[in-house]
Figure 1: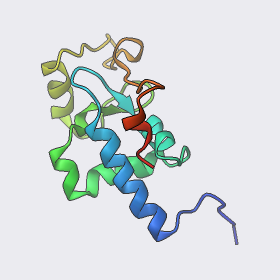
Figure 2: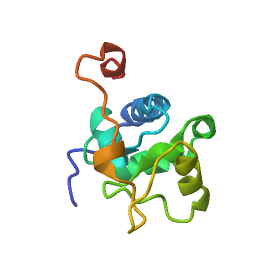
Figure 3: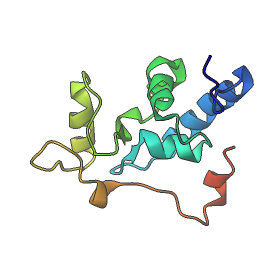
Figure 4: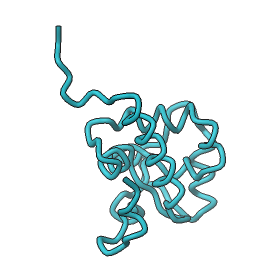
Amino acid sequence: MIDYPDRMSQEQARRFGEDVLSIVAQIPRGRVTTYGHIAAWAGWPSHSRMVGRTLRYSPKAAELPCHRVVNKEGRTAPGWAMQRNMLEDEGIRFKANGHVDMVKYLWEPELNDDDFWNIT
């Protein structure tokens, strides 16, 4: 049997979900961040897919700017055609390959932003 040292307990998973939703709520209009960044900020850098699942299945996510979360290359979520429109409505422009320009639009909290860093 394989041992997964980064497996979450139920309490850790609950807290992770809360942290993910808190982080997504803070992404400013006209900016994006990645699933991987969110997972790392929530303390579980190898759990970017779980960020996506949290956003997809949490009823609270419907009230949040989930459209501002893209993958590390700047690709939008597959099967969610409206995501690109929502980002464009906020002034985000896409490169010729259909990806968000991550150099221009990536949001990362300031190191001195105590309100953000107190999520966990």
